[in-house]
Amino acid sequence: MSRSTGRGPRRFTRWWRRRSLRTRMTVIAATAIAASVFVSFQVATELLGGELRDAAENQLRADSRVLAADAERAGLARVQLPPYPGSGRLVRVILADGSTRTPAGQPALPPVSEAAGRVAQGVSADLMESRDGDDEGYLVYTLRAGDGAVQVARLADDGPINQLGFGMLVLGLLCVAGGALVGRAVARAGLAPIDRLTAAAVRVAQTRDLDAAIPDEGGGEIRRLVQSINDMLAALRESRQAQRLLAEDAAHELKTPLTSLRLNVELLIRLDRRGTLNSALPAESRTRLLNDLGAQVAELSTLAAELTDLARGDISDENTELLDFADVVVAAVTRARSRKPGIEVAVDANSVWVSGRPAALQRAVLNLIDNAGKWSPAEQPVQVRLRAEGRSAVLEVDDAGPGIDVADVPRVFDRFYRAESARALPGSGLGLSIVRRVVDAHGGRVAVARSARGGALLRVELPAASPPAPIARFTAGEDPAVR
Image: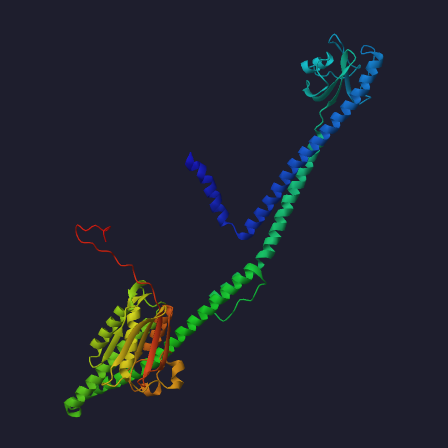
């Protein structure tokens, strides 16, 4: 029983959802007009019925007073009754003995009711009542006159109400049909911008032309929708442009190490085929060439890893967590020392809590240390300092190298950008770009300046977080309330 009860509404909901917006608006408009016509019909019927009944009752009272006055003068038994049907009303006289007089040829009225009999006996006042005859319904008014009473009656005429109902029905059908047409036209006119917007979006999807902005369609919700789609297209254009630039820059950066690697490998293959490898390349030269090949392969591996990291839409799939930034810095320094045993790093890291992704932050700090390690002299260690300043965690990495030229400062965080003095050194030009992306994703900022030792000072600021609440620990048998 419950299943069949709920199945109907679900079917209607599914049917309704499959309709187009234009059809929905048409149905809603027609339904609203039909409901309005129905309510108007009910109200008009009640008002008209009440007015007609009041008019009929007033007329019956007036006619009964005239007949009662005649009966008072001539007596109930001798009063002359108006002929039927000339007066257009039905009359009856109730005598003192309970008998009645009616005009000749007049249709029989319903029998005298007990309430009307009490009026004739003088027990009750005048009475207005609705009575049903054999075939018709009557409205009967009884008024005391002499030692009896007079009655004036009218047929209950529902003709005007029926005519009104038929007229309202015809008018309602016309209004519903007109409302459906008007709703359809309004829906077509109102949804025309949506249709043009849909056509423009389909055209963009088919042609893949993201430069074709959708024209503005006036104001209100349509304008906001158009602006949102145009903003989305602009974001897609920027993303595609960024991908194109990344591919072009990657191809350019990969070209040089791949060419060098190919030439060295071809040289080894050619000498080996001739059988002159040992004579043409002494052991020292061969070792140096193999070392160069190893360095080039390592550089390509690093570049491929950095390109993969940079091409991601997000920093990583790891979750954000509350962590002590000092632990991240120490871990990055440890990795830097293991990767380059000759690098010297001096660490001064105070505990500062931040909310972030530990692996991404460690990669950013490692890139900063690697960058500084390329420039700092062997006798001058890279200095890494971490402290809290207000509501920020500030990380500074500086070296004692030549520093960054003023002309290079605006582009030092651009992808693949390498200053003239850095092009002879190993690297891809992606390290600092990754640093800026990680810092931006954590709501921080990174800047470059000149350190007190004359080298470069890279400064990272991240929003600090409140440290976690300490967890109370109790020994066995200890009462926590005592502490």
